[in-house]
Structure formats: C-alpha cells, structure tokens
Amino acid sequence: MYLDVLREAPLMPFSNFVSRGNIPDKVDIARPRSYIDREVYRLVQQTSRDRSSRLIPLLGSAGSGKTHAYHSFKDKERENIKKLEQSQSANEIEVGVLPVDWTIVYVPSPPASIRVLLHVYTCIIEEMGAGLLDIVSEKLVKKWGGEKKGLFQKPKMDEVIQKGMREFPGVFADCVKALVTYQLDKNKKGLAERWLLGEDLRDEDLSELGINSVLEEDDICLSLIKIITENLDKVLILYFDELESPYRMLGEAAERKFLEVLKRLYNEVKGLVITIAVLKEIWPRIIEIADAPLRSRMEPEQILKPFSLNDLKIFFSKSMEAFWDDNNLNPPLYPLFPLNEKLIELIFEKTQGNPRNSIKLCRRFIDKVVMEEMTVDQLLEVGVDIVATTRPKTGIEEEDIDFSKPREVIKKTIEDILAEEEYSIDVNPQSVAGATLKCIDMVGSQKGKQFITQMEFKFILGKRSQTLAALIETEGKKWGIEIPSIKTFDRSAGVAGYYAAKRLKDAINEKV
Image (cartoon, rainbow, N blue to C red; front, top):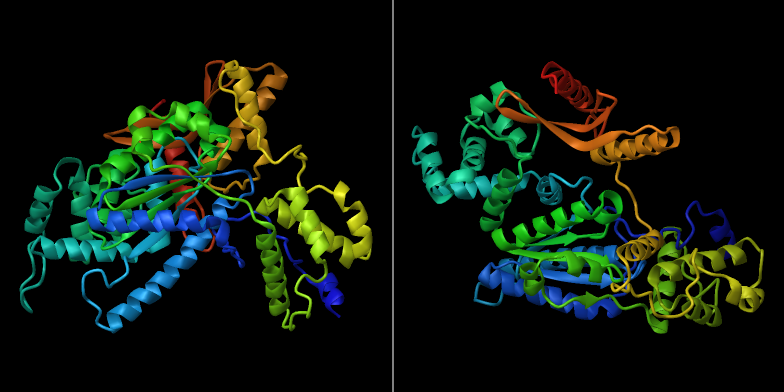
C-alpha cells in the first residue's frame, strides 16, 4: 500500500532539493546550525541594547543550507512572537524578563546593480506589510505634537512637519512630509502612501504633496529606512542571500556597488543585524575587494556544517513522516522505509553530508525502488556508482581559489564554482531587461555587429530624473527598452503599461 501511494503521489518526497526564499521548508535539522543560531541571537540581544548595527557573514558550500537557514530563523521568529504575547499577558514587565522583539527580512540578490537600497526597502515593506507605515508615522506624529487635543481641534500639519524636519533635517525632509501627510491628511493619504511605497507619481502629484524627490533615489530611500528603524521597537535582521549573484549576473563593478550599499546600511542605519549568506569558496574574493573599514567591522565568519550520519537519518525519517501525514496515512513501522539504514549510510558516504546532494540522492534511490527498477539489495550493489551532483567530487574538501594565479585563471575558477551552485531567477523588469540585453549582445557577436548596451538608462525630464529599463546604441541609432512592472493582470496592469510607454515617449521627445 505504501509503495502504491508513493507511486501515485503527484509530488514525491525530496522533490524540492533547492530552498527558495518565498517557500518554507517543512523539515529542519537544527543541530549542524545551532552554534550559528546562538551567535545571531547574541547579536540581536546586543543590538537591542545599544541599537548599533552588526554584520555577520554566513558561509557554506553549494547546497549546504544557506537559504534554508533563513526559514529556520523565520520559524524561531514566530516562536518568539508567541513568547512575547505570553509574557505581556502575564504582565512580566521587569527588565530582562521580556524576550527581545525582532523580525527577519529575506533580501534576495538584487535584480540590478543600481537602486539596491530601494530593493532592500521593498523587501522590508513586503515582509512587515504596509501597516509598518501606520506604526511609524503615528509614533512620529505623536512625538512632534500632532495628536488631536480635542473633538474640534486639529493639529496644524505644517507645524508638525517643521518639528519633524528639525529632528530629521536636510535629505530627510521629503520623507518627513510624506509620513506626516500620510498620518494627518485624509485627502492626500493615498498619494503619500503611493510615494512611500515607491510608486511613480506625476509631477502634479508631487507638487500637491510638496515633495521634490522620488523614493528610488539612494539618499532618499536610505533616509526613509533610517527613520523607520529608529522608530521601531524591534531589531531587524536583514538576511542577504546569494551575495555572489551580483558578480555572476552583472560583473565585478556591480559586486563593488553592492558591498558599498552594505557598508552604508551598517554605518548609517541603527537597529540592524545584517546577515550575509555567501558561497564559502567565493568569500576570499569578496574579502579581497571589500575595503578595510568594512572588513574590520564584520563579526567572525560562521560556517554551515554538513549533516552528520545521524542528522541524515533523522532528516530522512522526518521527511517521510511528513509525506505520509500529507497523504493521511500512519507512518510505516520502519521509519527509513522505502530505503534502509545501509542505503542511508551509502548516501552519506557519497554526499559527505551535503544537504542538497543528500536530498537528490534520496530522491533517486526512492524512484528506483518505487518504480521497481531495482530492489533495495540491488541498489546497495550499484549505488556506489550513482552520484547526486552533475560534477562528482573527488574528495571531501572543496576546491580552494589560488589568488596568486593570473586574474583570468582566478575568474575562470570562480565561474566554475558558481556554475555548481543552483539558483533561481526572479522574473522582474530588471532581470527581463538584463536577459534581453545579453541575448542582443550574443546575437550581435554572432552577426559581427557591435552594440553598446546600458541597463537602467537615466535622462532628465524637466527637473526630474527618469529611468528606462535599458538603452541600446549601434551605428548612430538608439533603441529604448521599457518593461512594465506588472505583478498581476487583475490590478493596475494597464496603469503600469501606460507609464512604461509614457517613459519611452518622454525619452523620444527629449531626444536623448
């Protein structure tokens, strides 16, 4: 019966061997990562006390569980929220009794080399919800004397804004105006919210708000992040995943820009624990190009350990238990069914405890048994020749990058290592535009044509900066590319398409 269920199941066990930032993993084996968890929680406690930001590198080989670590932290966050609620309901208000309030925000690799801070801000808003703006704006308006003092007494918005600008002067001014307007002006609240969420506004809308800038500008976006973190009663863990991706997709210059953004967040924003997950083999290169101040301020690197044999057995049995539960069946008496202990040991020997490769090999072995291609005994005989990776490893140790070799040799070694790391590409305007430009360059090289391509081309319209997704130049002619930012065709697709076409038309009219 159990084999029949496995055979007919629409989704076999161990089908998902690559963790995704937006899809929780069902089974977590915490032991190999427990020392990292303790270190991150220690930094959260310290940051809660002094509000100084911390930066901790989390290193691991391909498939070692870097993205999965985020999901385990997210589970711990939910447990922490329950503890906070229980403590508050029990009126435990003594110092040190309440657990520290914190939230972890997943920040995937940025889709482009610019507007990285807007990418970070968008991730914060998506994780915490637009209600975050209500919490922060209400707290600030109260601080700046904007509370209603009677039934017919309304606070004077201009006075509140002026008080806010005294606390946050200069580049913060537009952020202060938007937050106060959002909280106090019902008629303009929608416009202020759109600006705070990074939407494109017409010049007339910006004039109505009394705002001159747009949120996509780095200084403005960083200012808003600073205001938010300084007025949240919690620590934010920013979990930057796939730190090597900017180099892989956009080159060394993009990687340097990304590191500069990390440094600005660390230096200028309070209340952050910045966790950067990166391939262990690539880390020496990142350290090499990072400047001395950034290197000196990092916490010691934490390395993800592979599964032990017992970890793998527990992981397999828990995963199978979850599968039987999903199919409304009591688990078999033997927890390692349809494999056995010797096969699990063989899998461990072949993968050296690498979680992703272990999952792949578990899936392959189960397929063989379920589809009756082989018995368990036959698998034990031939299993030594079955590999989990496309490139079999010759030993336990990963390849080290020798930085004494010529630059081109180093670059080739890095690219070979990156090729082994499986990754997903988010479909968004930047990634679509980037892929389009790469295809154009490839076709151009085949046809002997030279194209000058530029991602995110900026031009000035009136007093405002406008951006096209990309620009292509050849033989004195220019072509603009614009990709509408459409998440769903049920809402706002037409509006996004209209503004994309308008930006192209504006660029033509300005004769850029």
